[in-house]
Image (cartoon, rainbow, N blue to C red; front, side):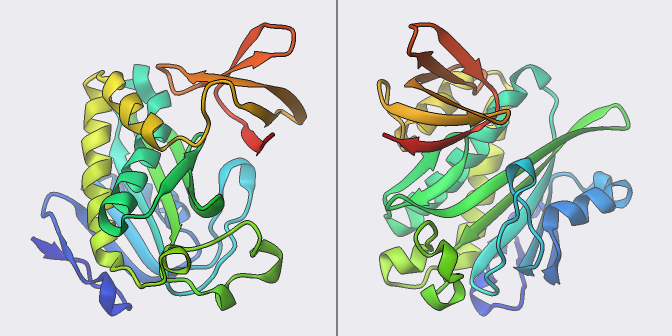
Length: 262
């Protein structure tokens, strides 16, 4: 077993030898680091890139992940995707991996907002950004994960205090970030392995345990610049959101954001 050595002492934890690692005290974005160095890093798959501090992370649709300094997990995985048919499930697999790790190590009641925002007590504690790309005829996935772990209230900007939180703020205690990184890594490789083997039912089953939306919930959904109101019906076997609109028709979405649950 290798050890994950980063600036924060509580990040030191054994990591399986088959996972290659690149650790940094700070970077602009772990996803960006992988994208800019893909030529040299592509031979190290599966690869975990992590940093103590990330200064310019981003979320879906180009939104910024607001930096909070130390106390967060900032990491990206570079993986091969051989089964492209089920690639839509990758987002669900990543969200489920993080949720399973948090629930298992902290006992907190973690929820997922489709597709993979991490929420605690209705507040956002983390997010995941996945970038799929063709490289030398192979499909690669860069899976970026940002998670507020031992982040204090004073580290959050005043304008996001009503919408953001951290594991320590909810639990009242510090978590071992190294152990969380290990568990997330194990679950992520497990669920992506299931996805590669076409066993999507196993991913959906675990994902739905954490999904905050239930069939029949009235939701407001933002997609391609417009807001659509309807009832949440299900997540299909491709990882897409199925809404029942007011006229009774059903519509399927592969991207977008749920703004509210009425």
